[in-house]
Every structure is written in C-alpha cells, then in structure tokens.
Image (cartoon, rainbow, N blue to C red):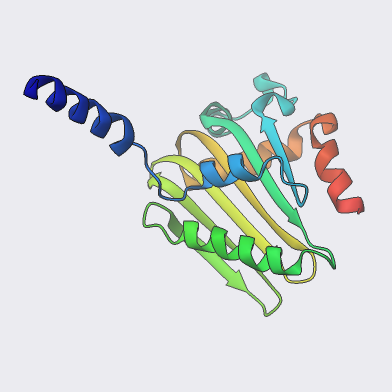
Length: 179
C-alpha cells in the first residue's frame, strides 16, 4: 500500500511539478492570439523569395539560421487604454527575466523600443524586438532560429532588401495599420 501511495505521489509531482507557471513570451503569444485587441502573425522563412545562388556566404548562413517570425501587436483605441497599460506591463515583466539578454534599448518619452535575445552570443535561438507607442499600441516580434548571432540579423536585413517578399502573409498586419 505504501508503495502504491509513493508511486502516485511521485507521478503527481512529475506531472504537476514539471509544469512551469512562470510567464514566457511563448505563453503570452498563445494566450493572446485570439484576443480581439491583438493581431497575431506568423511569418515563415518561405516569405523570402530570394535567388539563393546570388547570396553571399554570410547571407546564406544567416538565412539558414532563420526559422520564422512571430508578431503580436496590440492596437490601442479609446476603449482599451487600461488593457494596453496592463498588457504592456506584462511584456515588460517577461522581458526582465534573466534569460532575455538586452542588446539595446531606446526611449523618447511617448515611445520606446528594445532588442533582447535568448541564448549565448554566438548561439542565439530567439531575438525579441519590443516597440511601443503611447498613442498607437505595441508590438512584440520574435525572430526564431538556430545558432543565430547579431551578425546574422544584419545579414538578414540585407537579404530582406534583396528579396521579393510575399506580401500575402503580411495582410493581417497591413489591416492593423489601416485601422
């Protein structure tokens, strides 16, 4: 009987104890994807229509390290100002977790932005761009990949400039900007 109780207690602790209740950006994205004040967008790497033969070695490495981009944007209006403040505070709290290492931050009164990353300097799994404007809302952009580094991001920007982006994937974001 004691053995049965021990096994039940052990299984319970494994099942329920291993669940991490700490906030994370992944959880935040999942929780708010269906919220009417947010627009969520997943952009796959195939949005970039590039001629891979014309890429430099550095650009090719950057493209191979890139997996996808997740965007979650909160559109501020007259009715949701208090929710905007609460949601922005949640994101700021999540980004204060030590796993998010800050690359840069800027603020100018009514607007601000930050760039953080998860991983080590040469093995970054996630870049996070967080931008907010007191009269418009905020956006969180997660760039996910494998073994990225800051140089890869700069090279990805040059790839973006040369690509023929499939704008169909960006339609939901364009709708948010129009409102």
